[in-house]
Length: 135
Image 1 (cartoon, rainbow, N blue to C red):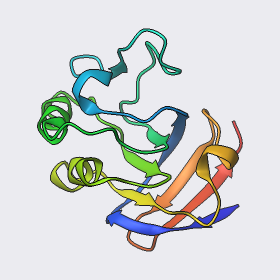
Image 2: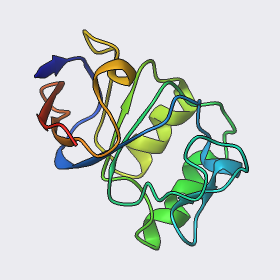
Image 3: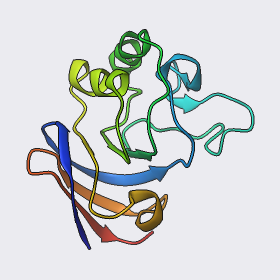
Image 4: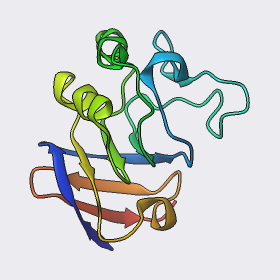
């Protein structure tokens, strides 16, 4: 299955998807030292997004987020790519400032067609997301 969307940050990446149904903020939701999702009760609590294709609905602010993401990137703890239903400005800056390929506004809701463990090939330059292998 190939989905088509809009580019936020160009680049090509492939890897395992990790999917959250909850809006995300790098400030407060990510343990920068481990790459794991920190909040108790979050649908990804304790799971690592590092090196994966992170799929989520939208960001939830804090202008400090891009700098927190930069600290995580220096430690190797950011996602390889991001797929968002509808990106907001802060999360767009996370992707741009930290060179994380990102797409949004896909022709199908990625939260409905991508599952954690699926293998994804993403060409954010072209705005395509291919679900290669369902996990």
